[in-house]
Image 1: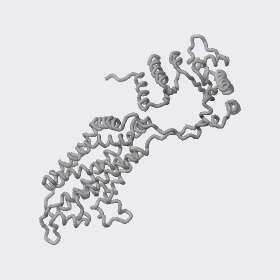
Image 2: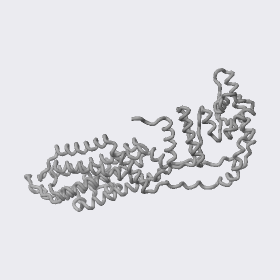
Image 3: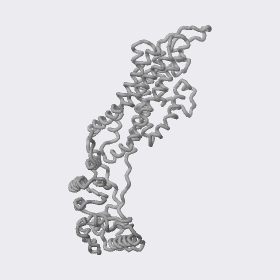
Length: 476
């Protein structure tokens, strides 16, 4: 399929920058690599922008005569020294007055480059060209070529201490931003078919593996099997959900910062569009996993229990994904985000309510079980599964038997014996909301940073161009 040409790429790049409606457009060699016709079209587009009130600054190399004549003002630099600054139409006259006449048939742009370039063919030509550049630089400063800035002298002194202007808001409204960003995010999610297939295979294969290992019944030994299975499900669900979202923000950070620097959209529409676009895929994968593993391992075969199980696993996946988004927003890069994943997972596994009970948690870490996504997912799954279960006593010592699911939970932890599915799900909703809010806060605080442009000192304290020129000549 045919792509776009070089000139079209240049104009497309300029158009992308114009989305933010900048007052100043700075381009580094926008005509390099283009033929004369395409270069002329690009500069024509820039000239139209300048006529519309935009300030366009270009670094241009080897311009044709037509392209050169389109520029209003010209700044010539050589070896870091100013050679000329003024109207582009006056540069030939300026050099002629300095003893450098433009030959017939040579366009002004080519003449300027030849005049201020260093000729390295021989030692003599190099010394001669360096001498010429030094003379032109000295002459430029001595003749006060910056005088056209003096008309702004008083304004600059008055505005030197003025605070910077407030940044304007995006042109599009929040709903339009959300609609467009959601469309972009949805295309990204649905377009990455390979990643989606891999995630689906992960969920299916995990459910099949669990189904091939576990076959639950109502014996005494099945109590431990249920606890181990539900714990593994909570851990695995959390791990997969976090891993799928933890790199979402780091990989897009450069794009988002660039877009926000142009005031194209805000942090909230971007964040909300990401959440809404990824929610259907996350819910679908959770439902596939839950729908497969529930009958395969032999959990309670009742409709309400099954529907509650699907709701728990889906909400648990959302809460884990929200935690992954938060870690990704905090991390400066994808590698840093992935480095945060293992310690976070390990801590949540330790304080999941099964490996160490909440009653025995160290006082300094009393808060860890409260924010452990794995703990609340495991707790909700246990209460849903063990509630209403009756176990047969198949042991020799009848006193060691556990008759009901409620008794089994009480033996694990006092917290589990008094907990409810609703309470665990509310806790997961609280974690989900807190992660979303904190992620949004981080995104809003990590917006583009700008350098402060200060007024030159000589425009504030009245230093004359003559004094500056004398200082320049003395230093060189």
